[in-house]
Amino acid sequence: MAEQEKPTFKDIFFVPPNYSEMLKRPYARIEKKDHDFVIGVTIQASLEAAPPPETDPSLGEMVTIIKEEPGTYSEATVTGNTETHIFDIPVVVIECKTYLDKTMLEGSSRAAEDLKARNPNSLYIVVMEWIKLTSDVNLRKYKVDQIYVLRQQKNTDREFRYESKYVKNSINPAVVQHLFKKVRNYLTTDWVGGIEMGIQRGWLIDE
Image (cartoon, rainbow, N blue to C red; front, side, top):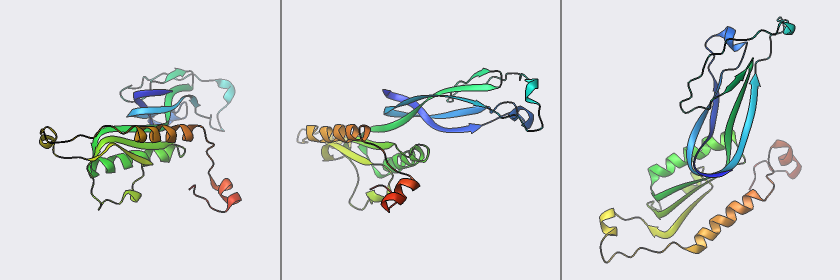
């Protein structure tokens, strides 16, 4: 799955109307988030509540189906006590901007942190034409994996960009090629990680 402007999985939570209904089925909702460009995979997950130990499973009680509000959440198919949800898990996310300033970078970093908390093997990239950051910004504290400046040029006020003397750099094909190779290498390389793998090599966090 590779698409533009694709709403993908952000979080899952459970909202049964009461405890007795929660014993019957999960009432799960999938929260989604829009991304500019996504490469990922479509997941179909079936969820059901395990019967309490004191309940005789042979009774096979059927629940009354309460419709969920679709909104920004996935629409679940309910069969008996089982819910089936279909949603997309992002693996590579590319956020596209005209320019990037510090406030935008902070927002991108929060989105990347949320993504990696649910899918540690994800790659979050920000691409823009111009950059509006100073040397006082510590890029290492942000959670994005890479930032590409296609025109290799700092942002100026919009009115200056329309002056006849303003020179707008062309998009550098070498930068685009670097982006392409980074994504391709990421998708064609084994993802190794976790505690067990880290113990074998002696360090726990991938470099």
